[in-house]
Figure 1 (cartoon, rainbow, N blue to C red):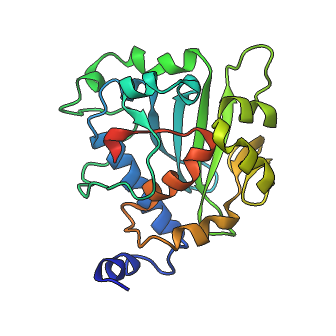
Figure 2 (tube, helix red, strand yellow):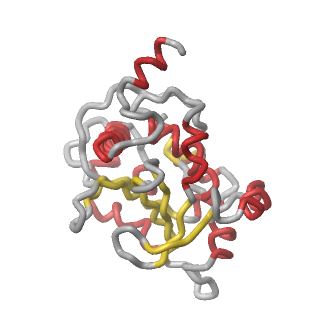
Length: 239
């Protein structure tokens, strides 16, 4: 085990499994990375916010992004600085200044200083809301997601809509063959208790064991593994 891996593992009680405190800190790190990144126009189409459950008091992250970005040929994504970040992409170590999605006082990012009206523009069309929660049994992050404002001929809570609007074509056959264990599954949402899709976390432990991830990088690496399957693209400036 390398020295870098030793430093990483000392941050955890049982890497790659997370305690609730470790997960909450990892959420703060990712929110800080989003807040401090110079996202430019991408900030209008990628909204990340740290939330806390009113019932259990647990922290989780919400991410909203237009579905159109997951369907584009790449030209729009390139313009907005969006893309799939692989688990091996580098990560900045400056994690100061934890902020919420309201982005108050973000110097250096002119788009963040404009009127709040632009912050809701992505909600006018089809979009997906992703949520990152800590799974109480697997003790790893789990990605929940729900489609909104779809065309009239599409249903939000329909697995075919997920494959049509979120899953890249090159992954559809692979993901269908996996089944619900390790693939796309559905259950009652941990906060709302409404039916919702999620990426089953049964393979997360084995996947994260390949990386000696610092806690500040944990969710970035994890999203690089999981997000690609359901169209979750991160702003490249967050790498």
